[in-house]
Amino acid sequence: MKRNILYALPMLLLMLSGCNLYTQYKQPELPVVDSLYQRLPIDTTAIVVDNTSIGYMSWKVVFTDTLLQQWIEQGLVHNTDMNIARLRVEQAEAALTASRLVFIPSLTLSGQGGLSQYTGSELKKSYNVAVTADWELDLFGKQLNAARGAEAVLEQTKAYKQAVRTRLIATIADSYFTLLMLDEQLEISRRTLDTWEENIRTLEALKRAGKTNEAAVLQAKANRLNVEGSVLTLERRIIEQENSLSVLLGMAPAMLQRGKLSEQIFPEELSVGIPLQLLSFRPDVRQAEYVLAEAFYATNAAHSAFYPTISLTGSAGWTNNGATITNPAGWLLNAIGSLVQPLFNHGKNVANLKIAKAQQEEALLLFRQSLLDAGAEVNNALVQWQTARKRIEIGSKQIVNLQAAIWNTRLLMKHGSANYLEVLTAQQNLLQAELMQASDRYDEIQGVISLFHALGGGME
Image (cartoon, rainbow, N blue to C red; front, side):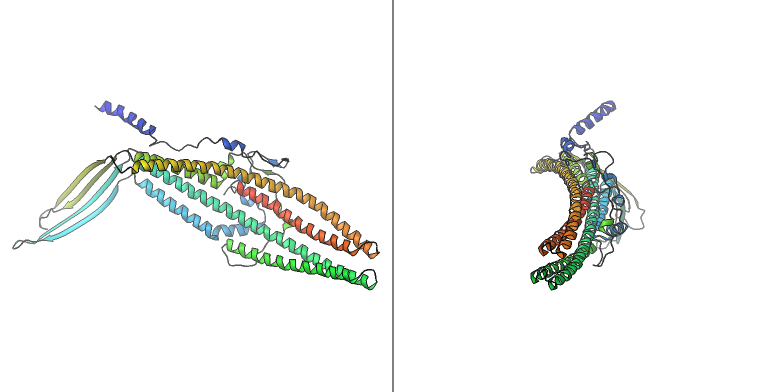
C-alpha cells in the first residue's frame, strides 16, 4: 500500500504540473527584438552598437554639470511622484510578506467564561481558554501561484519606481538645459540690442551727413523694439521655467543656480547597446513583463480553482467543562479535517479561467508593444542627436559668414556703397542664426537625454 502511494504521488504531481498548476513563468519568444534598431541614421560613424551602452552609465556620468547633479539629487529625495512610488513599493512588499505567510498555519487565541444557575441550585461558573490552528494544504498550487503573483506585483512596483526615477532625472535635466538655452538666447538678444543701439547712432550720424534718410533710422528703431519685446518674452519664459523646475524639485519657486550652455560637455560618440538590453534596463519593459508574469500566475490560480480545497483545523485549550470553579479543569483537544470540491458554481470558475487567459494574452500584446515603443524611442533619440550635430556644424559656418557680411556691409554703408537695408537684413539674419544655434545645441543635448531615458535611465 505504501509503495502504491509512493508511486502515485509523483504521477499526481506530474499531472498537476501538466495542468499549469506549478509551472513557472518563462519569457516568451520575441522575434521582434532583433529588428528594433533597423532604422538607425544613415551616418553611423558616431554611433556604436555594442555592449558598452549608455544604458549602463550612471546619470552622474552622463550629466557632469555639478549644479545639475545637486538639483537631481534634491529631486530624487523631495519629488512627490518619487515618494509615492517608494510607498507603493512598501505596500507591495507588505502584500508579498502576507502572501508568503499563508503557507504556515494561522493561530488564534480565544477565551470564554460564563455563569449559570437554575432555580434553587448552586451558581455554576464555566470557563475555557483555547488556541486554534487553521491550515489550508496547498496541494493544488492556489497559494503558491498567489505568492508568485505577489512577487510579480512587487517587481512591477519596483519597475514603476525605476520608471518614475528615470523620467524624473530626464525631466530635471531637460528643464535645466532648457533654462541654459533660454539664458543663452537672452544673452544673444541683449547683445543684439546693444548692436541695434549702435546701428541707430550710426544711421543718425549718416542722416546728419546726408548719406541716408529718416526711413533707415525708423526701421532700425523698429528692429530694436522688436528685440526688446523678445527680451521681455525670454525673461518671462525663464521665470516660468524656473518655477516649473522648482515644483519638480519639491521646493517653492525660486531663482535657481545654473551653469552655461556653452560649458556643457557630452561624449562625441554614443553607444546604444544591443536590443536585448532594453529588456534589462527599460523599466517600462520590465514592468510590462512582470504584468505578463502576474497574469500567467493568475491563470494558474484559475486552473487550481477546479481542484478541491483541503483544510486542517485543530484546537487545544483548558476548560472546566461547565463544572464549578472549585472542580479541577482539564485539557480540551479537537482536530478536524475538511475537503471541499467545487461541483457547480454557476459557471464562475469557467468564466474566471477564460478571463484570466484573455488577460494573459492582453499582457503579452502589451509586453510586445512596449518593446516596439522602446525601439522607436531609441531610434528617434539617435536621429535627433545626430541631426542636431549636423545643424550645429551648418549653423557655425552660417554665423561666421553673417558676421563677415555685417562687417562688410557696415563698411560699405559708411562709404556710401551699400544700402542701409542690407545692414539691417544681415543683422537680423545673424540674430536668428545665433538663436537657432542655441536651440540646436539644446536639441543635441536633448537627444542625449532622450537616449538616456530610452535605454532605461542608467544604473542606480
